Structure formats: structure tokens, C-alpha cells
Amino acid sequence: MPDENTIQELAARLHGQLLRPTDAGYDEARKLYNAMIDRHPALIARCADEADVVACVNLARELGLPLGVRGGGHNGPGLALVDDGLVADLSGMDALAVDPAERTVRVGPGCTWGDVDRACGEHRLATVSGIISTTGVPGLTLGGGHGYLTRKYGLTVDNLLEAEVVLADGQVVTANADDHPDLFWALRGGGGNFGVVTSFLFRLHKVGEVLAGPSVWSMDDAEAVLRRYRDLLPTADENLSGFFAFMTVPPAPPFPESLHGQKVCAIMWCWLGKPEELDGALAPLRDAIAPVFEHIGPIGYPALQGMFDALYPPGLRWYWKGDFIRTLPDEAIALHVAHAREMPTPLSAVHLFPIDGAVHRVAPDATAFGYRDCHWSSVIVGVGERLEDDDVIRDWTRNYWQALHPYSAGGAYVNFMEDEGEERVRAAYRGNYDRLAAVKSRYDPANLFRHNQNIRPAPV
Image (cartoon, rainbow, N blue to C red; front, side, top):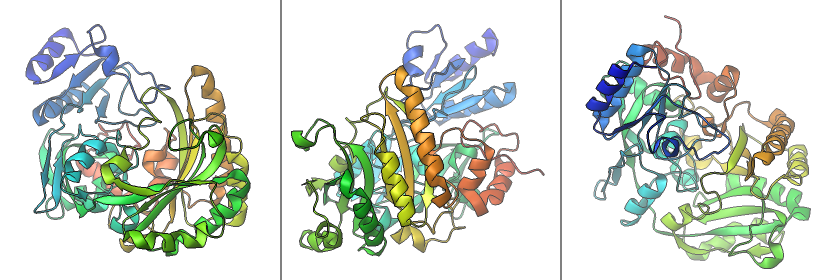
């Protein structure tokens, strides 16, 4: 813990607010999206600008303080907060500027994807992001980023053009294809290991109104549906995206009361092509196995992105595990259905997100995100509302993952990982890990930025 003089000096230097455990607002500032995580930083700096970030980095480095970096959204294992350390909270750095002529958007680290979607949507533009609009821009981007637009436009990192970065020594640099290209390579999937990004520049695409919504089937049809989905999507028109889900139907529109509370399988579709061509794209699956419910229609892309926000508000209790998947053999599908039938809470779910199409047209060593040969990024999420749910959601998630992991490609999307240890981090980057460790040793040799899915610096 810094002494009082040091704390006062930092407070005076910051343009934002410095919070201590005794200060009003501290408990609110340390709340996490995942209520299962409860951490108590010594100091929380509500950074107002890049200079505040530099001050935090310098103090943490000079005093050997644990340093956490928090963006504007959420992270499953709550790695943004550190016990007894300093947290640089960037949520107030939410400047955002769209350039519709250049089709780019510059985004501050405190922005959520909802902020980006709404601003870009005014110009019928969008970039690749996730499926919940309260997700923060920094975490999703630095881990790779996938969502409804991925099959056509790649990963979020494939659309990142530039980043402003505060390094471990307090320098501020621009990383892009020409300046600090090794750092730019590492930022595109390597997480928060290399510095604090204070500005992102993204490429935008023409995306206005889309056709989207769920098709829902009985669990009795789940094996057949998942087999058809497995065969359909990798060869489908890249205007079609759809993530597969096992879920419990929520008691809310658009679902009919007859389905409320039932465990089902579903596909959440998004179609970017001509409206009259959607039925033909879905026919191989939908005509073979009729859904028990379907609600697909025109919707603005920002509204689609916010569709699940109300279902998953802050303050729920989360435990999740993921894996990348190349293929889904029938025996793996049978295991999926068996474990999905045992979903322990109404909010628990399993998602298979497609990562083929444009993702496959980028070489596995072109960015730090190396799983370019897989077709899905899977996540198993145990979600509860009470402390008493913790053990059951954790056990179900682990058991499900252990049963399916032998059918995986070996590693997971870092944004779908808990704090799982060094071997799992290595597996997440496979052939790119050693190169990442070398970049880490250049930009952060003392591993200041270690409260993340950590890549250790390579020995020099």
C-alpha cells in the first residue's frame, strides 16, 4: 500500500477521481458484472484521459503495486480488479468519433459496443463485435472478437486498424501496420498483456437493417438439429450467420407462454443478404426439421446487438468455460444434448459461435488469434442469481466441459476462459505463444500487465 504522501500526490496529478476503501463511491466502483467475484483494490483511479493512465502505470511500476485495468464492460473472471492493488478504471474515457466517409470509427476504452453500434448505426455502418451490447470494447477486441458479422467480415481484430497504447515504461505509442508492427500483431488477440490501449481505430462496413431472430426446437429434436446445423453453416452463404444455443426459454416476448421455462435448442440467425433469399438459405435445416417456434424479421443492427441485454443484467453469478471446435462428430453432439438436458438454472446456456468464412481467409500467424482453422468458438455458461447457485453451476459447467474437451481443437477463446492457469493460456495461443512471449519481453519485461490471461515474458 502506498504511503499517504504518495496517495495524495497521485490524487493531485489525476484529472479524474481517486477512490480509497473509505471513500463514498468505492463499493460501487469495485462492483463487477459477475457477482461471484468480490475484490478489494487499495486504490481505484477513475481515469479521465491518457495522462491519468500514464500516471497509474508509472506509480504501479515504481512501487511494485499490482495493477488492474478496467474498461467499460465486463469480464467473466473479473480480472480487471486486483486485491490490494491499483485499478486504472477507464470507463470514463468514452469518446467516440465516426468518420462515415472513411468508414472508420475511433473509440475510447470506456465505450461499450452498444455505444459504438448506436453511433455507427446512424450512418448504417458497423464493425464486428459480440452479441451483448453492454460488452466493453477493449476486452472483446484484445481477445479477438466474434459476433454476427464474423462470417462475412472476420474477427474484431481483423477490423482493427490502429491502437494508441500506454506501455509499461509510461511511453505512449501508436501501433499499426507500419508503426510498432510487432506490438500491433500481439494486440490482435493477445489480450491486455502488452499495455493499456487508450484509443482504437476500426474499419466499418455497410450494415443497416438485417433479418434476425431465433428458430427454436424441442430438445427431442436437438441431436438432429445440431447435426443439420453442423453440416449447413460452414458451406452456407457468408451473409448467413447463426449461433447455436441450448437454453431455457425466458418468460418474456417474443416467446409464447407455452414454451416458457422449457429447455430447448435454438439458433439465433442474422442474415445480411437480400430478404427474399433468406428462406432458401435456411431451407436445408428448417424444412427438414420444423421449429416449434420462430421469430425472424427485420431489425436494425444496434437493436439486434442489444437483444440479450435485459436477460443478462449486471449482478448475476457466472462461471464459464470454452473451447475452439473444428468438427462436431455425432458422438460429441450426443454428449452435448445429454449435458444440456441438465442445465441447472434458467439462465445457464451453451453457445456455439461460427468462426469460419472470412476468418479462414486470414493466416493463423497473421495476428495473435491463431485458431483460424476452426468452425466454432464454444462456451458453456453456468449462470445463477443466488450464492447458493455457485456450486451447482460450477460443477455442471466443469463436467460438461470435461466431457466435450476431447473433441475440441485444444484451446479456448481467451474471453471465454476463467483464471485457468498457464497451460490453458498456452493452449489458447498454440503456435503463436512463443512469438507473443517474445513481444511481451520487449514491451513488458517485468510483467506489470499480468492480471489477465497472462503471457509471461520470454527469458532474454
